[in-house]
Image (cartoon, rainbow, N blue to C red; front, side, top):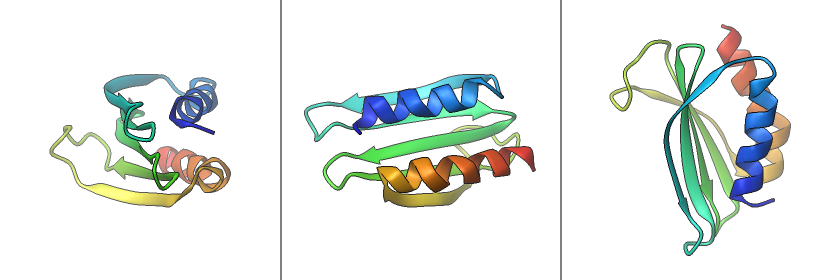
Length: 98
């Protein structure tokens, strides 16, 4: 799975339950397909960072109602794409409920 497929999958999972606002995005196809996207969902800032060279995904979540980019991040997932899909999205949904 590449960055664009990861983002598409993530947005499909989220749009069913929550509205989201895209705050920032960057995609570098010439740099192993790396990229990141930042969203505001339920008052929290969610950042997904994909390292194409290492095939790693990092999920960062802010506290509720912090201003972007001056917020503190909780890092929830740093693993391969399957870890992000299997565990990271579930952790994020749990965090958004709380």
